[in-house]
Amino acid sequence: MMMRQEKDKCLTVLNKNTFFFSNREFEESYEGYIISLKDTLLNLRNDVEQYGISEKLISDYLLSKNNGLKAILALTGLSNELLKRVLTIIRVVDDEEIISVTHRNKWNISKLHDNIEEMSDNKISTLIRDNKYFRTGLANLLLKGSSTSFLAKTLPLFELKKFGIANFSFSIESILDTLIRYKEKGSYSGKKENNPETLIESTLQKLDISYDKGNLSSISPTFNNSKRSMDFIIPGREHPKIIIECSFLTTTSSGQGDKAKTEIEMNNLIKRYCSDSSFYGFIDGIGWYVRKGDLKRMVSAFDDVFTFHLDEIKRFVQKIKHELGIRKK
Image (cartoon, rainbow, N blue to C red; front, side):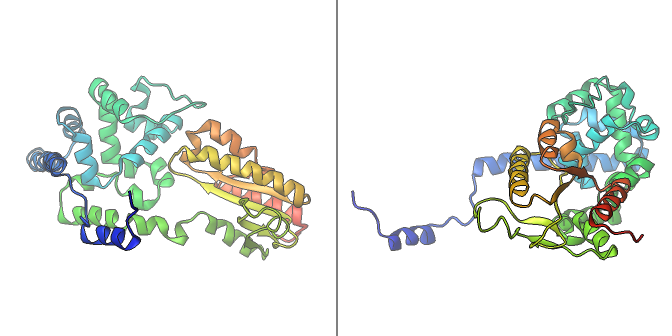
């Protein structure tokens, strides 16, 4: 059989292009799902107007309405992923206020500090159905989370606003706020100022410490295919004394194991070709907290590891000042 010419194949793609794939049967089925979420929220709005906003009302909707939680998440602009992250945090912290608000001690699930795994959608649904304390605690979290001191200091303000009673008022202002936050989420996440690396940059600048970013000169010519683009090289690429890599993760993925392997390989190269250098890691975020196995491998790649906690930043400053022989404050 003769192969078709490139021109013919290109014309097939251009002339028979569907532009946007659409499975009509699936579209109609999914539209029914969207309508059910909308109807749930319309019913919730009517009940709020008639009975007022309360923990019991939200708890009842979580229990009795199909896709009740998904409808409420749509109303607040809260992603399912962020909710899971927050539930994980609540399970491992010992903050009296957040424990009281969420009734955490009556969820009948272990905190499992050492091997905690995030709740699956099925687990959350089961707890909503079978455990009234989890259900009312979740309702309280959605209504009062933004006013708890722990979440106020833990969550970014952009996300904190999604946990509050105002989201259930169905006012034009609250709905517009949700729409804007949803629309700007990608832009917000991508802003350089929202990258924790900027904290290291400002710290080094305050100390008047020079640094480079990118390839290590002593490794690049030898290992063209190796990862060698470093986040910070102090004081510079030619004669590095401190090399820093940052990994702040708020989500989990199978790629965390690969990242740990890459950093271990990088450490071996640094020890071989930059033997006088220290290799530091800034490892932080809930994403690492729930992947303890990957975390253990990751930290093994570094001579020392820091987080972006204020105490850890202070320790980092003292350590690099000592290594660089800086005696000024």
